[in-house]
Amino acid sequence: KAMLKALRQGAKKRGIPCTLDEAQLAAVPVPKLCPVLGIEMFWTRGKRTINTPSIDRPNPSGIYERGNWRYISWMANRLKSDCSDPEVFEAIAADLRRLGFGTGRPAE
Image (tube, rainbow, N blue to C red):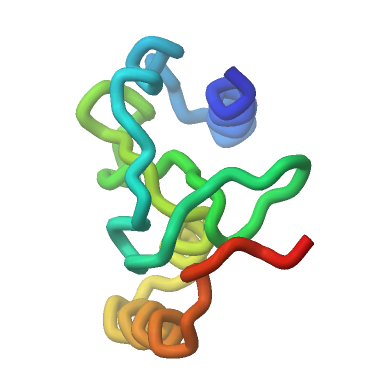
C-alpha cells in the first residue's frame, strides 16, 4: 500500500497518469535480484537503500499502467533517470557488481 501511495504521489507531481492498483502490484512478485543491476533486492525497515525495490516504467514516455511497469532496485531506477549514456550505465552497473554492492543486507 505504501509503495502504491508513494508512486501515485510522485506520478501526480510529475503529471504522469497512474492506473495501477494494489491488486496489479500484488500479482507480480518482487524478484530477488534487480533485473538491471543484478543486485539483491530486499526491504529494510524505515529507510531506502540501493537494494530497495522500486517501480520502473520501461517506456519512460508512457504512463504507469499494466504492461509498462516492473520492479527494479532503487539504485537502478536512480541511475536510469540520471544517466543517458548506455555505455556509462553499464560501466556503473558492472563496477557495482564487481565491488559486491547489493549482495548482502546492510549492517544494523
